[in-house]
Image (cartoon, helix red, strand yellow):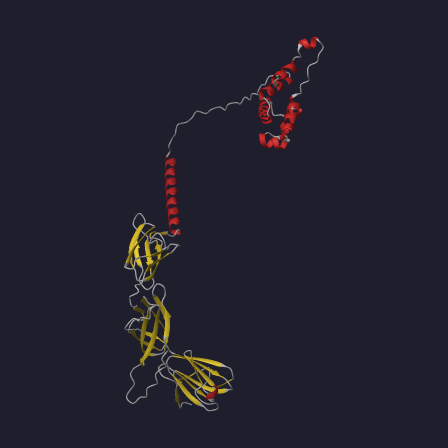
Length: 457
């Protein structure tokens, strides 16, 4: 027998059974049915609330039969239907039993009468001179603001740069390749700079669609290119610089080739380290040496004594980088020098003949350090022929362990009361003592000559 049949038996007891004095089976009330169904399902009110989206207080009111706690008949029917489906009961039977237990009351939804506002006749659209002026000013302000925003974004954002050819940033090409075409994308009209060590950068302007292309020269070995872009309107450079390596293999049978890019032949320098740089193809090392050619000053007058030549610096061996470049500082004193640069290949072959460059080194001035070691000494100093005011006309006694420094344009002359404890350092090169302890002597230091003993007192 279905639930609907049981409900009908609960409403009217069978007359035949009543005539025989038999009582009908008691049917549980709707609240009892709901409670029993939930217990069979094995859930509590809070779990049922999460599953049905009906508040637990309303579900509890349905299970207690306290319908006054519910919002109204319309909501109650909806709650009962959804709750019955959730508990596995027939929603129609549940609603029928609910109506029966309420005494057959009709479900009347409350009616709400809302007063309609008095409508005002709609006026037609009118344009006044003030309205037209205001609209025009608004449009101009909006357009100007949009223009400013575009300019701010353009000036604030640097251009981008991308490579489309080659597809990777490290590639190897055939040994016969001497040029390669680079392609990419950037801001329309931007200037693309492709820098490579030892050469002027390649410059190309992007087209209106932002594409660019240019051919670069390749040398044997590893060629490095740094690709960036500059917006000519803002002067901003791209945040990213793409570093590209293109390797051209060496031919084993080739002898090394050598190019000296620095220093230029006939160049003049001040005393100090001179940068020697260039490129050596198919080579692993470069050797730099020097030969003294003479003084950098005017020729000596007849009968005038010439100073001894300065010591020749030792040769320097430099390793060649993977891209064929080399660079090293080479220390030279004042005078005219001939630099000889040679390269050696992995197989021991040497580039012949060595590259020679003639340079002139002129003194920037003279700097002399005077240190007293092993006892006190009285000294007197002339800088460019004038008494040094720090020491004084009568000279000064310098304590053991103290060092003084003097700087002149042409010369520095020092008289020491004890030459053996007076140590000299000329232009950063230690000379040491020039006499014996307790013996007074005077020495002249000039950039183009060796230290000379004089009679100045």
